[in-house]
Image (tube, rainbow, N blue to C red; front, side, top):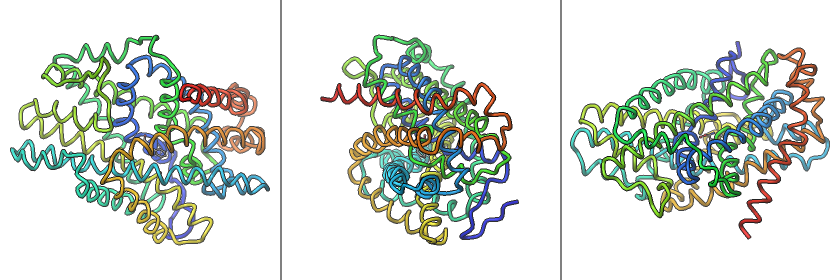
Length: 451
Ligand code: PHE
């Protein structure tokens, strides 16, 4: 079994442990906070259709590419590109990934902090302390945002300091199944409420006239964000994979699981919006569904508060506990990327690296805490543009410099006959042509619409 000390490179203990850790990275606020919000912003079911295409035709091949690069090199994103080519310029792809990861973690940590403050909001509200509840529900209160960001970063750092199998793997293994269970119970509850069928129709019946360049661009950014792709998180997690594991199989579980959780979250939140409407809350603005960084945080408590006190206490608090757990398994992976870089490339011990880097990112989080409009700005640059750009560069690097034959050779360990399989014939075509072309077209279309 892999024992982890402060500096050695750890590894995942079991296959399930890896799949759950990678799924834990993928499943997070992206699925439960952001996905329903972009769905609402882009007209419902039509978005989901394009999102499915982005996840399976672009996300899945890119995830395999990242995991394979990681396992082959056993390195952080910068070290990985350095190891695979003599041209040091390629390390810039890894560096770009680390920058995106750091900036994403900076805003992600603030939203993750909200999940903690809403646990307290739900408890205080149910116990009748409405003033305290209103205090915890205020998303625009800087000092409070900063405090919860600090708490959340503290939780992330403490797990990262524990290393791979003892820290990350153990934490995610217990959290993920609970998360799924609570989500399903909540959906069951929402469907007993008035208004939910209208929400279901909105969520599942596509209006194809809504599909345009903006929607496709949003779907692609969302797919990269939700699957933790384009910034080297999967290169890093792949670097802790052992040679017995079948990479494409593991990746398929992660993509399916991530999509399933996003789909379920939408199935909870879009109908919940319509239930809220049945309770007199305004959910449309200028003819489209309200959507904002605060959507989940504003609409859901209203729904919870409409229930009797005890039911509200149980559902409201478990929901936000669930959300904070999902966020934690993702912040862990976001922080692990720069930490593994500091360990591998600069020889800094794990604990020290974790504390230093988390401290630096926290400074940015605290700044964002006082002006949350930065969340949208940073997300549009580092998430919507940064991650697909990273994905594009990873595909081009793998397809034309490291070469797909070498990647297939690496995949052979754990998937013996890969080069003769249907997958082995198709995947190189995706990495070399289909993914870069699709990402390129979406970028081009979006740019054209912008100017
Ligand atoms: N995938 C995570 C989520 O959906 C966010 C994330 C992005 C994590 C990039 C790691 C890397 O919440």
